[in-house]
Length: 421
Image 1 (cartoon, rainbow, N blue to C red):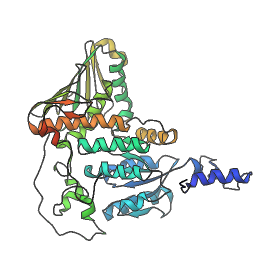
Image 2: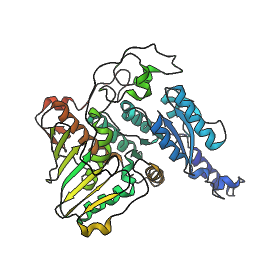
Image 3: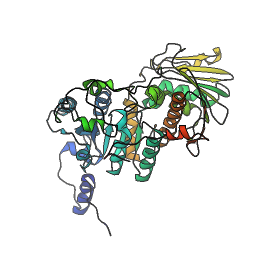
Image 4: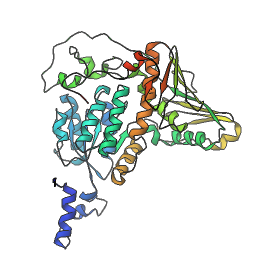
C-alpha cells in the first residue's frame, strides 16, 4: 500500500492521542486568550502579489486563524513589499521569498495560496497549486480563455480542492440583496439583466524593447510564463500589460464582466449554464438565455451608484446597485426594501473569510469553481462575438459555438513551452 507523510496538524493530533495525556504546551498553542490552536490554523502562501494582491492579502492577514509564511513573485520590489507586510504583522523576519512558484508549492506546511498574478498566469498557477495539494483563492479573471476556465474547474473537482474566484461581490451585502430581490419574485418575472463592462479594446503591438534587468530583480521569462515571447519593457511589469491580447482576457471585457456578468448569472439562477446567443453592437453586447431572459453588457447609461453596477428588471419592478453600497428600486412599493450598505464592493474581507471557512468545512465557496466556469465562459463567448464583429450561437452543454469553426478556434490558445496544462 502506498504511504504518505503526515501533515503537521495530523502529527499534533496523533501524538496527543498516542501519549494518552495532555501535552505540555503554551497557552497560545491551545487557542486560549484569543489565540488559535495550531491544529486550527491555516498556513497561507501567496503568488504574484501586486497592488490588488496586497490589498486582498492585507484582509487575509487580519484573520486570527491565518498564518502567512511565504511569497513568490518574479519582481524583487514586490517580494520585499510583501515580506515587509508580514514583518509588520508578526514582528519577525520569517516570511520566505521565492522567484519560482514550484518552490513555494513544494512546501508541505502550506495549506492554501492566494494567486494574484497577471491574468495570463491565473489558471496555470491555480492548477499547479491544486496538484500540489493546496486550496486556492485566485483573483479574476481566472483564465484568459474558455479552455483555461474549463481546465481549472475540472482540476479543482478532480483533486477535491476548495477554490474561490476573486469575484468578491458575491459576498457583498448590497449585491446579495439585489440578487435576493430578483430571485424572490419581488420584481416579478425577470426579463432583462444588465452587466457593466469597460469600453472594449484589444492591442496586438509590442512596446519598444528595453534592456532586461537581472533575473533577481525581474525574471522576465517567468513573468511572461505561458504567454508568447516579446521583448522586455518596464511598463509591462508595472501594470501596463492590460489590454494586450497576449496577456489580457477577452478584450478587457472580463475586467468588470467577470464580476457583473457573474452577478447576472446568479440573479438568473444560471450558475450551471450560459446564454445561448451573443450579438455585438458597438461596445454593447446583447445575449439571451435559453429561458428567454435577456442579458445586456454595456459600458454606460448607469445611475451613478459606483463602479461595477448591475441592474435586474422584472415585469413588476427593477433594482440597480453598484460599489458604493446604495440601491435604487422601482416601484414605490419596493422602497421599504431599499437600503444603504456600508461595505464597498471592492472589499474582499467577507469573501476571504468565506474561503477560509469553506477550507475547514470543505463546503462550496460563494464563488466556487463551477460558478466561475460558466460566468467566465459566458464572458469569453461575448468577447469572441465582439472580436469577430458578428452574432454567434453557443451551446452551454457542449461548451462550444454552434456551426462556427472560427469562433471555436478562439476558445483556446497555445502556451509557450515549457508551460502547459
